Amino acid sequence: MKNLSRRRFLSLAGAAGVAAAFENPLLEEPAGAAENSDHAGDFTFLFITDTHLQPELRAAQGCGQCFKRAHAIRSDFAIQGGDHIFDGLAVGRDRAEGLFDLYEKTEQDLGMKLHHTLGNHDVFGVIPSSGVAPSDPLYGKKAFEARFGKTYYSFDHKGVHFVVLDSIGITDDRSYEGRVDADQLAWLAADLKRIPRATPIVVSVHIPLVTAFNSYVPPPGTAPRHNGIRVTNAYQVIALFEGHNVLGVLQGHTHVNEVVTWKGVPYITSGAVCGNWWHGTRMGTPEGFTVARIANGKLSAHYETYGFRSVAPQDT
Image (cartoon, rainbow, N blue to C red; front, side, top):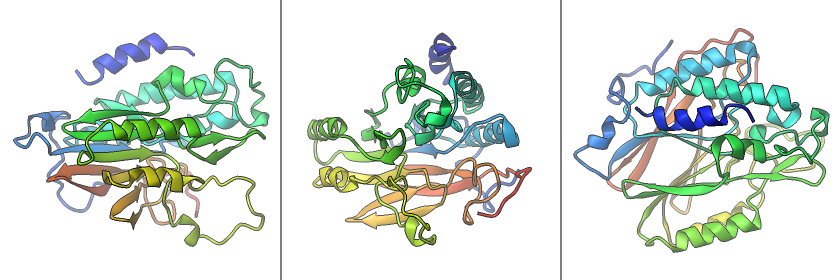
């Protein structure tokens, strides 16, 4: 894909409306200032998901507005929760490259270290109507890897172990489902085994591991062929968390705010930067992102809106 060398440069150089109704003490301090906190283990980071970048519907302007808002929040780094663009699944090479280029340009407004999570709409050319052949060198997840690196990985920050999972399973009939494959499960088991069990852990995943979303909407007239709302084999992932100090799991995909706690672990699904795909609020959740705080060995989070106004509002 185009602009790979430019992205490498920006990844090295990038670190050098209506607000919330209450005064936020995290606002208006320079990004990265938390590195100088008196408590080395306490810090703030951002979870920014479902940007769905496209040139239509003022999406790039809205995303830029969101990133500038996020930049004003004192944070050590951000995690992008997936679905950077709309819609890599169903478009050809030129459109996909243009969308990724637009996202990378807009991301500069964030001005802080950013870790990326793969979303279903970041997968290239999988739907047959895209006209993309599976033999294309960027087919599937390869386009994302060329831009952002591995689809699952871990990193450490101030004593906290972060795990970024790939929840996108590409199916034989050229669609997708929520799934963490066998190779990744083996990697996750090994990754968790190598750290002390008391180590605090935060997980990022796009398609939720745990959600009650289907309880909020009527059942579809025809059962979908694949489970795209949650990770089908989430029970296998969750089993690996047993005995570890998982502070929380941050999720995207459904575009609604939701917290489900299971065995003491909060599964925090964040609303979307794009809201209802740039058509207004999504089931009552406005456009926004999640501000997460690690303090005294606990994870807390709240949702920030940024005042976007859709040019084509639609009811969800």
